[in-house]
Image (cartoon, rainbow, N blue to C red; front, top):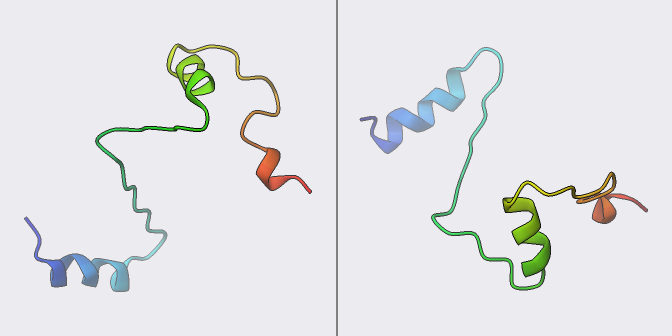
Length: 56
């Protein structure tokens, strides 16, 4: 196991790219329960799902 200092040093010495993934133990989306259940079930989300906030 790396110490916090050793882990931080890895980001100072990488040569190509660094990627950090943070996950949650539980995902709860109060505003979109039906859409979230459809996603979890592997349903068709449509071609523009998830893009609305990036399109102006």
